[in-house]
Amino acid sequence: MQISSNANIQSTAKAVVPIKTVYTEKISKDEAREIKEQITQNANAIAFNSASMQNSLLKGGDTSANDYESFQSFLKEIGYDGKPIASLTQDEASELVSKDGFFGVDQTSKRISDFVINGAGGDEKMLRAGREGMLRGFKEAEEMWGGKLPDISQETMKKATEMVDKAMQDLGFSIIDKEA
Image 1 (spheres, rainbow, N blue to C red):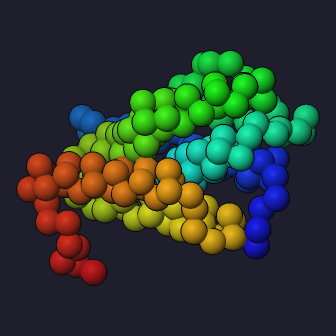
Image 2 (tube, rainbow, N blue to C red):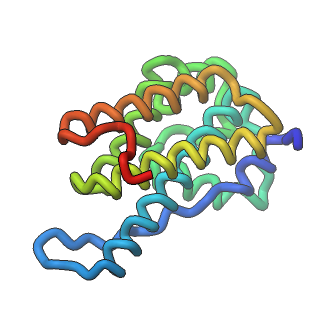
């Protein structure tokens, strides 16, 4: 399916759910499974929303009144406090998706990977679940886009995956899941 407007992309934004934080108490297997699922869902949502944001900026800031509040809420959740996207000039939008821009490859991949890494708290299974959620969100974004996403999104996902893989290696985990 080909998406014809940014409004369609923005209306599909997925909500990020707060994750229960338990660092000092023992948790049950059910609670661990629930936290793992939350991390997976949130990594999926962040990856999907970030890819959609990058693509909508590349096409121009066409937002409808119905999607505006949802879109602004998503931007605020990920830390964007700049000029409203719909008010950007072409040069300002280009700057946001430039290498060092807020929605560029470096900052976006760092936000995605940091979410997975920090949410997992050093737990191997949670890291794997978050990594899988990232990749699944990217795949969903491609399906909604109607094919391969632009290079900026491809580069962002590659870099985010590399960052999660490096964190796993640094923690002594093999990137290949031996349990699968």
